[in-house]
Length: 233
Image 1 (tube, rainbow, N blue to C red):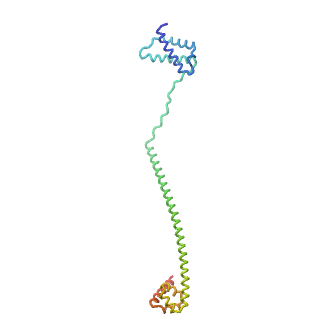
Image 2: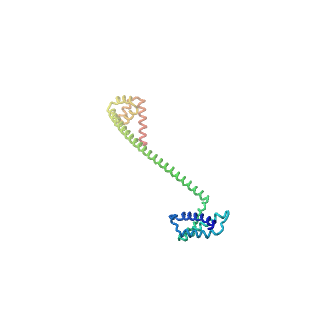
């Protein structure tokens, strides 16, 4: 055997064994048959007759021979060759949107935010107004109740006062004119006016004629003014 040929064949056998081990999971070194090795050696013997390349071409030829041996073994065993992997290119993204579109979107979003803010302010204002209205309504009810109570009390007071005045009128009317005049000069002029105005005209004249001239004059003027006021009404 030619020493050169034997030296070249040994590395290829090692490469062949390594390639088959990597490509076929489950294929172990013990599974190689004599016919397979013979086929591989025969193929290697045929290719080893050509002169070996020197320099930079040595490595590519070794890789080519290894690939050839792998394909030959696959063909012999009936294994399909691996399809060449094709790079899948994803479709390119669409062109970026127009800057004017972004500007319009930002403007619409800003307007939307402003509108929501105004709506919230309006809602808060309406709630405040409603609260104030309820408060004013409650206070008005309280005021109306107080006024009604005061009027009732005033009415009762006026009624009581009038009853008392009516009683005094009867008392002073039953007195002698000089006695009634002496008492009326000492009391409050307004009360004297009410008593005299409630007397009958004849009795009131007799009492006034016996009262002090100044007091009688003042009472008479007020009686006249009161009478005129009643007529106008």
